[in-house]
Image (cartoon, each protein chain N blue to C red):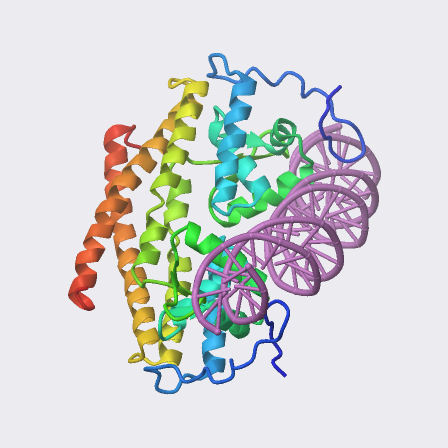
Length: 183
Length: 183
DNA sequence: CGCTGTCTTCAGAAATTTGTGAAGTTAAGG
DNA sequence: CCTTAACTTCACAAATTTCTGAAGACAGCG
């Protein structure tokens, strides 16, 4: 049985009676898994590491919006090490947060439904780096050369984009508060 | 000599007298190369294939905004096969266009300074696919389950984003026409 | 303080991606 | 049509990434 991974020396037991998730009506595990994998695949296409994508998709579709390492490992059929690596990455880019479970030394990884696309659009740091590189490019080509001009235009576009993205996210926050609960 | 690649059976000659690019004041090849490599590195970070990124960066910083396969191969020190692959990818995603050189059977790869970030932001098709997947996710989770709700919110965000991006690019076109030439 | 459950790190196996050489394919020019 | 420059494709080697198993570190509990 088990078919999955366990931790350290001894095979952990007592995992069996998961499956009774709180508010769930009737989750079809297969259908959920299909979704998780296809959403993950798209994230991979978009450049995310495979395991991080799978973990993220699993969290996003979980009812509680949070899962333990063990649950992730079992659901995705991967080793604890893989989960650990994926979670490290995801929390570095602020797509999930980690929280200790009160009663136990278990940790629980959570995706706040809003936090994550904030992270996606808050490429601020990234954009800044691009801009810096482009500025260097303009300098070394000379602002008057045709190449330099082209780079300057690209730079201007990124600066524009940066400002717009901020405003855009503000508008979304309003829209979101209006449509979904106002938390 | 040559230090680079050549085509097929015989080593081509007569490449030597490039370097007299039309409108260039005094391009420092080393400085340009540094820029190309660091810009490419950032594109790679963002998920682009390495060679495609290098080719693209080289084109962007070239004075004419266009280079032949041979020029790319020499500047980047890679084989014709590598250039071919990179260009195939780049034109698939509309980041460069290919044009035949009139007098010769050479081809010339061009980046239109605007076309490329249009391509970046016109992830329309991509967004549509994401939305489709998310919709399927909402369905299989049930729109009333907590998980389903979270997915629905994500979906709404993408739909919002799609509309906003379109408007955003329109604003940029105006801004660009104002700042740079009006072509 | 020692046990034990949980997470992390690390070295290496496996899979994937990338770029090359060589053998096509295509079409311009004689 | 034949030649040949220019581009493409393909099989494979090299580099890189990704995951695992095993050993380690850390904390809560007794």
